[in-house]
Length: 535
Image 1 (cartoon, rainbow, N blue to C red):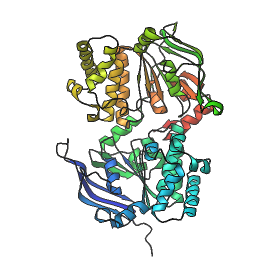
Image 2 (image 1 turned 45 degrees about the horizontal axis):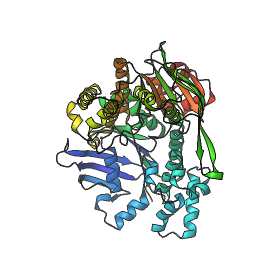
Image 3 (image 1 turned 90 degrees about the vertical axis):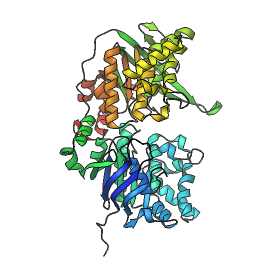
Image 4 (image 1 turned 60 degrees about the vertical axis):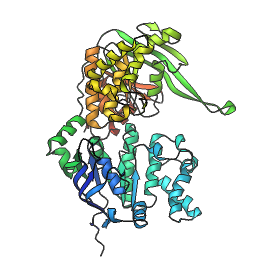
């Protein structure tokens, strides 16, 4: 008789080494985990804790610089490290599937979705006729609204949520026993996150699949997890049922992560000071297609906002709601079709030349991706000093200010001579903040500036923003899809949908007593939401 409680995955005292010269000897040390049938184990920890290294070890894709030195990894009772091709390749491809954080990057941009998914079946000898049928069935299973259309589409034609559904479809095509999901919802807006989490939970049951879910978000853990393991510096510090660990954490590190996840939402009241930036019924329309096939897309529709000196305005909404398009309008990177933008009471809607250049020195931006925002060819000091030099500062003066800014954002002067790739994601974001603030702006626009960072680093960057704002006195527009973050950092908030503002007001009023149906939906969709409380 088949043992239905036999472990799907077992890790016993796994140790994975680091190259010589690293800050520690082990990437992972003495890690033991067990996942049972139809169970979801959430692996939680900060960036660099070893979560993704474990996933790579299970999949057999560890880089040569990270050798498996100790312990055993067993899938369905078979020792993975001891498997050899073709046995191991067959075990890995059929019995395991993996979903990565960046779904679009996981797909080939020059091949249609259907072709890419069929390739998975082709390798395993499935006939052409059956391949298409199975792919369409799976696209339907992941709840894509039009499977035929998705089948014929290229990845760039899909939204982030749709792309993630396609990647999940590919991972489940061969009905694996184990699905490894590595931060699959981190870059998605709150409602798309909720949809993907619900989908993974549904498919786990439908396909009788166990899940290893890697995340830094305890709200996500509370939604999908059965068991949890908390990692730090390559070691597991605490593990147990999700219910027990979240309610009664035993390890101090776990308690600190949970505290970081529960961001302080008791912000100060909106400052009654001088209006520094104002938008009055601005609209932005993009044209798509060519010649007679051109269509228009209304990205921003009659949006008005007011930002007072020293205050923080949060702009929240799903992907595609118009948040980033609004930021481009305010930065004068896009020309509005109608409406006016005022800076310190002066109409800057049509500014050009030196006047526009001067305005942009006063309104700076910090972008979402700290990895793509810095040129890998330039040292940090050159990246930070570039702005003042463009605006007339001497090389010596600009470099002196760059060193000063590095210290202000918590980095050492020695960092100045290093390259971007030598820093972590959180450190790179500090560098981007230094680059923006060296211009001594009066307004800082942060566009999803913490969404790519794990929860403890998020808190540090948010605290840094708040500290620098107090010291330097700039106003801030903080664009985010994370309602936890918006509540923690902002004085006032506007909620956007389909390019329009559907609700606005003081942050505490909007989040505690939302009036718009859409705002209520966003709040209830937040991972970990429990009837008015968010983990």
